[in-house]
Image 1 (tube, helix red, strand yellow):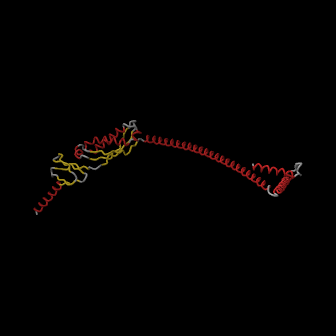
Image 2: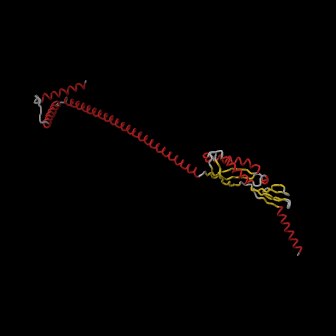
Image 3: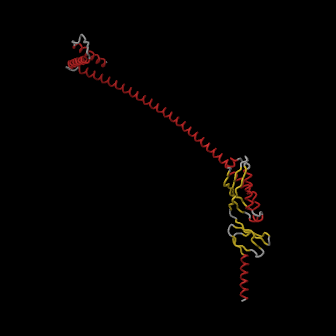
Length: 309
C-alpha cells in the first residue's frame, strides 16, 4: 500500500515538474522569463521549455494593437477658454523587454503623457482653431507620445479625439452666430433670386417686344407685297381685257357689237346714278350716244396702237 502511494506521489510530482517545464505561448503573445530574479529570455509563440524552480514567467504581454481610452480632462486654450477633451489612443507593444523593465505600467504612462501633451497643444490654439483642427491635434499628440514611449517598448499608432466640449455659454454663443450666419445667407440668396427674377422678366419682355415688332414688320411686308401683287394682277387683267376687246372689234360684226355693249353699259350707269341721287346733272350731249360710243372706240383703237408699238 505504501509503495502505491509513493508511486502516485512520484507521478504527480513528475506531472507538476513537466507542467512547469513546458510552456505553450499563444500567437501574438510574448512571455518574459526570469531566471533567479534576473531577465533570461522571451518565449516566442509555440512550444517552449524552461527550467523548473529556476525560471519563471514574470510578464505576459499581448503584442496586438490595443485601444486605450484617454479620460476626459479640462484644457485651457490660448484665449483662456476652458474645454473638456477626451480621446482614444491606439497602442502596440513592440519590445516586450522594454515594456517589462522600462516602466512599471507602460500603458498608464502613455495615457498620462497623452493627456499632458493634449493640454499643451490646446494651450497653443484659440478656441475656434482648436475646434477646427482635430487632425492637427491628433497628429501632434501621437507624434509626441510615440517619441517618448520608445523607451517603454510601446508604439503609438494613432490618437483620435473623441469629443471637445466647450462651456455652455460658448455653445450658446456659437449657436447664435450660426443662426445669424444662416439668416444672412438666406437673405442674400433671396435678394439674388429676386434680382435674377427681375433680369429674367425684363429680358423676356424685351424679347417679346422684339418678336411683336418683327411680327408686325413681317405682316406689313406681306400686306404690301399682297397689295402690289393684287394691283399687278388687276392691271394685267385690265390690259388683257382691252386686248381682247380690241381683237374682237376687228372681227366682222365686232365693231357693231362693241357699240351695242357700250351703249347698254352707258345707259345702265346713268340709271344707277338716277336711283342713288335725288339730283342729277345730265350732259347736253346725253342723247348723242353714237358720239360717245365713237369716242370710246377711238380710245380703244388708240390703246391697241400703243400696245402694238
